[in-house]
Length: 368
Ligand SMILES: *Cc1c(COP(=O)(O)O)cnc(C)c1O
Image (cartoon, rainbow, N blue to C red; front, top):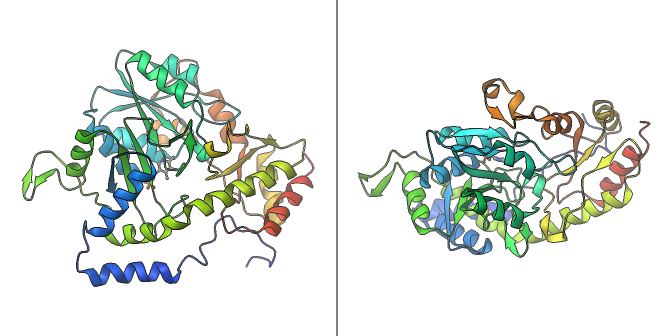
């Protein structure tokens, strides 16, 4: 049992709203429960929100990466450079497409992939750079775009943590050949189970992805490709259509919480990540701090009732199935260091000011 003053990291206690229930009932009553109107409505709305002509609803974020890469014709023999400081799904998506992941190091101040490290990873087989907008941060997109153009590489975006983030007026997913979204329940826009989408301005990519998610079907019972079953579920789409109306205010609240943390946290043993380049460029999927004494800090906060998580405690290159992947030739020291120091504070939209201040007080009273 938690004490009364506990600050839980996630809280879905009030997730079952009347609107959610109405959305589920709407689908059940419609008689169209696979790839129906809710899915197409969500695809149209999400594409428009990203400033793009096309979105393809799929089963989850991992599948969005696999399907997007395969739709671009990437596969065996092609190298895709990405970061080890991410959800393992980023790297799995590349491998499931049959391509070869190559891991670059991160910048210590943001934990985002480092451009100089990516430059060291480029080989004649490199075809794409898969950027992850980690924790909700979008940074240096023009530099990444220019780098990819100069080297003849595709830019691809993992947007699973960056719904509605903007860089130079362009939404996450609009910079790359495609953007892969996840709507897993804990994401900034979450369904009540698995859901995902990829967004693009490339019609032929969109058509390939639509076919791949549905057994590789061209028209009914005619199969042009070796596809998979990864359709966005109609009930999940209905929930997403309903919750989409709240995303703007949820993001505003996340930014407000982050501002209170930034202004209030004062402890020599605790480091904040770099401030966002502009307010719109960060949607604070996670608010992450760093400490050389991270494990003791985490226990201290837990004793004070503050629940924290670590994103991510074991970087991809330290996970058993990925030991043999190629990396930056000088190694991945900043990724290892970040994994040892990072700590994610509660940052959900339904966190109260009182709860935020309780977190700050607990951090500030920690003796480094
Ligand atoms: C959640 C997440 C994914 C995977 O999404 P799923 O819908 O769980 O498959 C991929 N990349 C990142 C950065 C994520 O946070």
